[in-house]
Amino acid sequence: MIVDTVSLKTEALLLFCRDLIHTYNDETKVSSDSIFITDSYLDKFIAQHIENLTKGINAILQPNDYYIRNSKVTRIRIILNLYNSINGYKTFAKRSEI
Image (tube, rainbow, N blue to C red; front, side, top):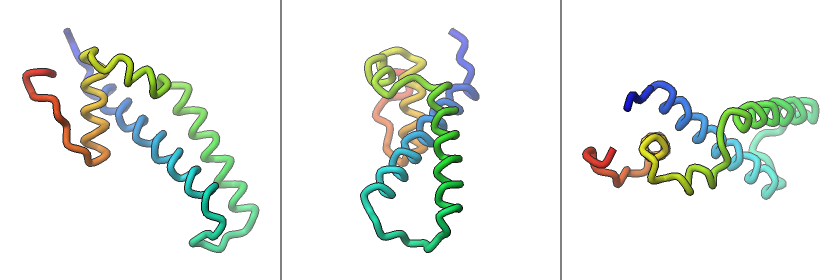
């Protein structure tokens, strides 16, 4: 089986970006106090660009449950291991398992 490592790394990075954006959105919804004092125009501008980024990422990636359901597939397992390494988690799969 031929594996394109660049596309797998890209997909893992996009998964990380999607999680990062969701975390940012959750934090801004929860906290009414902002660290930065910004104009409402800037807030709308940032929200619009984050929404566009989210739409683009979701158009490329599968839903999160797809990756969890198919974690035994070699390609998905490699993507999840790369995601964990980007995210700072230790990967538990041995080299021989990949």
